[in-house]
Structures are given as C-alpha cells and as structure tokens.
Amino acid sequence: MRNLIKYYQYDRKEIHDIFSPHSTFQPSRGTWGLQGIVRVPDRLKDYVFMVTFTQSAVEYQFDESVTDSGVLTWQSQPKQSLNESRILDFISHDHIRSNIYLFLRTNKKSPYTYLGKLAYLSHDPTREKPVHFKWQILDWKIKEDQLNSMGLELVSTEVEKVPSSELILNTSPDPTESNSKIEHDFRGRKIDFAENDERNRELGLSGELLVLDKEKEYLTNNGRADFAEKVVHVSQVIGDGTGYDILSYSLEGEEKYIEVKTTRGGIGTPFYISSSEYHFALDCTNYALYRLYNFNMSKNYAEYFILKSKELTELYKEPINYRVFPRRRTD
Image 1: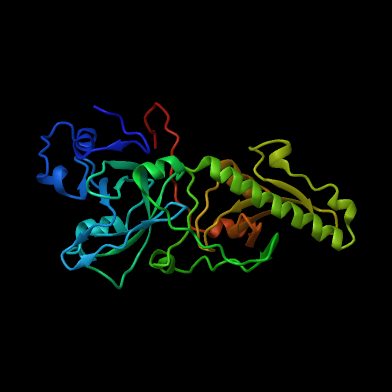
Image 2 (image 1 turned 120 degrees about the horizontal axis):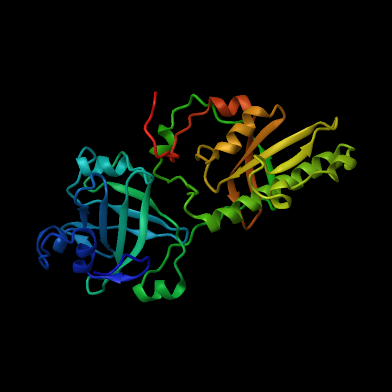
C-alpha cells in the first residue's frame, strides 16, 4: 500500500487502498470506483474529494478553479441541495475536528494529485443543485513543476491598489455581533491557518515590523524621540515566550506591552493566542493586542484595531488543544 504524500499522484484503486483497505475495489463501479465524494469508513465527517476539472454533467458545466493562494472554487453534484446531510456536513466543516482530502486531476485520463486537506471558507446560500463552495487548501506550497505535471493553471489573486507601508487604525468589531455574515459571504473570507507555520512566521514578523515602525513614528512625531529609541522588538531580541512582541512607551514614559496578531483576512477573521500570551494579557495592566487585518505583503499595508485586556476576555474563545495527564480526574 502506498503512503499518502502531498503532491504525489494516485489512481482510484490506490486512493481506495489508503482509506478503505479492507473493502473490495471495483473499477468504474461502486463508491470508490466511480463517485467523486466518498465518506471515509468509520470516520463520521471525514471525506475524500476526487475532483476532475473541465468535467461536465447533463445540461451543466462545472465552474471550478484553484487560486495562487490555494482557494478552491468547487461545486457539489448537480442534484445535491442545501439541506442534504452531506452538504450540511460540508457547510459545518471544522478542519480542526474532521478532514476532507482533496485529489484533483485536470482530465479523465490523468491520475489524481493529492493536494492536501481542505477547510471550509464559504458557500452560496442562494444557489443549489449544485451548491457552490469555496475551500482553503491547507498548507498550500505547490511548486511550478508539480503544477505543470498535473496540467493545472492557477487563477491569479487580484491585488488591491492600496497605499505603501501604511497602518490604518479602525474601531474594533462589536463582540456581540453574529458571525453569520462572515460564514455566508460567498465572496469568500481569507483565513490564515495555524498549519502554515513558515508562511505565518513571515506574515507575523511583517505585521510586528509595521507596528514597530508605527510606534517609533508616533513617539518621534510627538516630541518623544528619546522614548522612540527605547522601543524594543522583544520577540526578535529575546524570542517567543514573553507574552508580548513589542515593548513601547506612552508619551508620559509609561511602558506598553504590545502583542501583534496579523492576518490577510478581514476584520472578523479569528486568531490564535497561546495560554501564556492570554495569561500575560490578564496580568498586565498596560497590555494591548494590535489586531492587523487586510494585510497586503507587497504594499506593506494593513488596517488594525486594538484590544485591551478586558476586551480580550469578552471575546468568544474556542479550545482546540488539550494537555492530558496520565491519571484519572478527581473532580
């Protein structure tokens, strides 16, 4: 049996043997031999997508693509409606709790290339039969020769015209506002996933440098160049683990402890905060989290809002990891 490796090519039997090795494979017949959406046995909400681009059905031409940032535009089967169980599974998909594996080919004669796992971005609630989805391909790092091998041409992501090297302060979103607008915006929401460690380190550092320059500029322009010289990029000088990224100052010389969280996504995009960062925020009176969003790497531009400790505690938080001790609970 072959192992599952990103950007390697597989035929349907090999895909079947990976996910359902104890069942019988029937070429061009049955679930694994014919269908494009297959639920993984014994894993309630895990699915395999076997997608063929340029494919058409009776009286319907699929409109599917992948962008250079790894966003997949995909349609369900033409007979599927919004209230079907599988479609509801996809709409409620949480990539932390369940897996959707994407295998893609550009014509029926080619093998499938495994592109990785998917995370739900959005769907169009006004259209069905088929239902229209957007998915983020996690940890998207495909190379040019791999694209050429599978004959996949990526759709270019438009870069908005924005000012160069600018940080725009906005008000923070209302913490009581529903997330439904984000979930059902078919224009798609950009999400920076924690799995993309290398990409997120570059993104995070860029955001920190933008805030660092902003702090120094603010102090200098207000006659406190002496304090501007004392601003420290702590996460670079000392490293991670201090609970904040930048040590800055108020105009009166009071220390400010700044944590920076940066995303290419919109104002409502969730962010990750470690336990040590969160407890530092609770214990520190002069703490501020600068949430940068709509970040444009090429223009070094972002918008941002500021959260103080109390505001941070009021936001909805979801646990995604647990530390488990090898002993029974006593409570």
